[in-house]
Image (cartoon, rainbow, N blue to C red; front, side):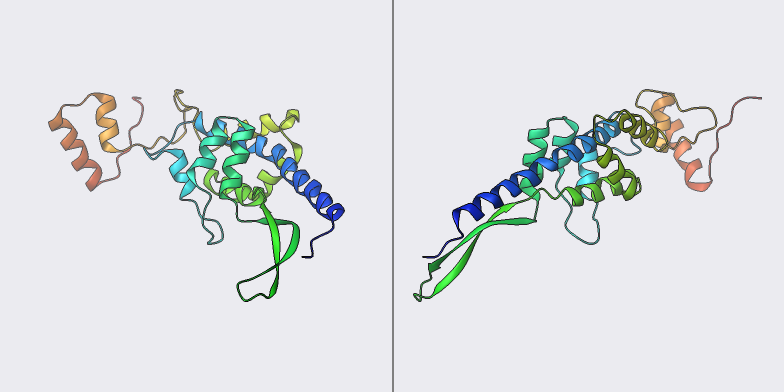
Length: 209
């Protein structure tokens, strides 16, 4: 039975481990993006991990919600495990020949899954509405670069309000009629009237002069 020489297999394993380790830096930056997004308000009741899992890139199946959940917790090991569990890219670490059921020799490759960090970058960029090349640039800077956290905050602040803060004067606040009724503690009849108004016209509320 022929096998890949042990030295060659060992070298491939070293290359594999290096590739897995190289993904940890970019993943730490993507954790900053996920955590930063979680700290900001959202326009719907849909959990962010659900929105992430529903975000397709180039028609491919998206990475699952568990990847987002692991990222927002900031645990690199858990994030790597979640991404490896969902990744589809494989790395050949060796091969050997074995007899099949018809007693013919066939080559069997020994494969391990690589973290699809590129897919994760694309999906993160799409769900946060940040240009993909900006996300990859941040990943190249790494989590320890002082520019990274500053730029992450600037990118997210430009797109999402910080949770718990009132919007700045002049900014656009969007909410449903039911949400506004709850905020103003309207009676059921007043809430129905408000719903009727917003169905029939665009309602703008301005400050008193």
